[in-house]
Length: 212
Image (cartoon, rainbow, N blue to C red; front, side, top):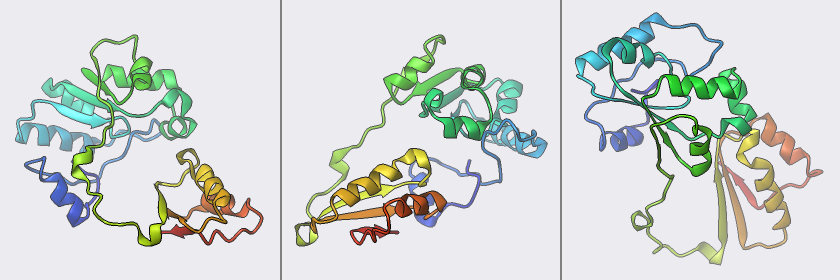
């Protein structure tokens, strides 16, 4: 399921791995939001219509699937990628203490997939946890294209909130300001935080940074 219409390219990529996509509006996990009965019933109807055997969900995705889990007795796999004991932005977004977040994830999950040993350690008190690291299949990439003018291109694709390393990105760009072979690409929203970071460098124009 998706909460909004994907781009055609992304949809084509998804359909390589899914036989059907359902698109309907639903909310991400937020303890301050009330339960949406229609949203909850949509998950039940989809699970019944498609004879779903297992629900796979990311940490921040809706909790309304839990009703389908309980009513239809469908096991749930939750893929946890966040180190929320050290992530104030994530904790503030959910609106719960990290201990309560961990308890809630464990309660509504039959199995937890962790993307690192650090993530897995957070769920040490609970059974049924599997490690599945984030990996890159290098065979899927090509290095045949030559660098333009032997330049070194440094990129950050991000939501550009504080925890994403935007400050570090601009600090490195500033240190490389006199070396023309370095070109920096920032791909993401130019929000107030990004503007504040740029302003903190006393008017430096960052001509070596391309914002996209």
